[in-house]
Length: 119
Image (cartoon, rainbow, N blue to C red; front, side, top):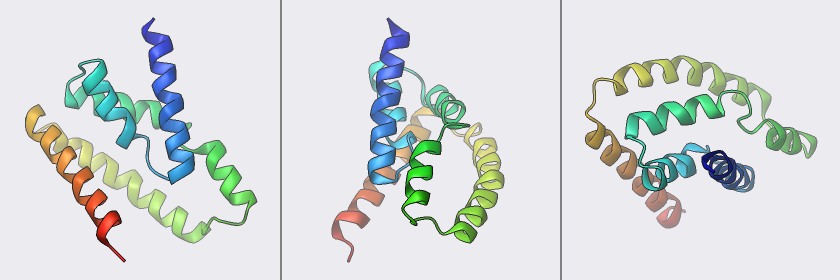
């Protein structure tokens, strides 16, 4: 039963990622911590592994076909994300789970406010 539930939240995250151009973590981490009672660290690690290969592959291909990909920006971001992700994951292990969860929530709120209230 859990496999079907995990596939369902993967579909939800995939649709949101493809539609809004967001990372699936925005959807997956709250679902894994809320519905499946994963710890914050477990939810983040699981999400990173789940997104490792398929993250937006088909969605990115669709955007590329429509001429909506800036390759040098994408490559530069990918290189930075590669090294930054390692650094962030290393630092996250030194942060207590509830603190990490609150920081994640604060980031989502801040980004949401920026999008809603920004020009």
